[in-house]
Image (cartoon, rainbow, N blue to C red; front, side, top):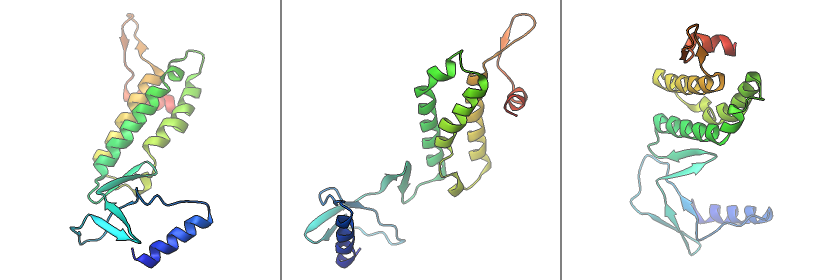
Length: 162
């Protein structure tokens, strides 16, 4: 970033009442050539180079893999489910309402920016496993004729959500 570009950015930001914190400004080089210098000095302020940062919930780094992104998304989905677990365990809510809550709260967190992912079989499999785990918790187990409880099989879950 040149000095002129940064000055213009700073002026444009100030028009909208935004301030650039000169002590916390960080940058990440996104070129094929990696520079060894970790400091960038513009207008007597220095910035620090970083290897990764979080933007809109996605971690961006120079060698970010889809596997890491999926792992972080699944962790965020588990956190969202645990945060709302009382709603999903509530007997007063219907299973249809719980499904709508799942689709609007948790599934969107897990699949955010999925259009940018490369659809590999193992990624799809991880997402399907996560979804089935949540659906089994929503629909509960099934009581057999002899009074034995068992978890629902995948075909039963598919019938219930369709």
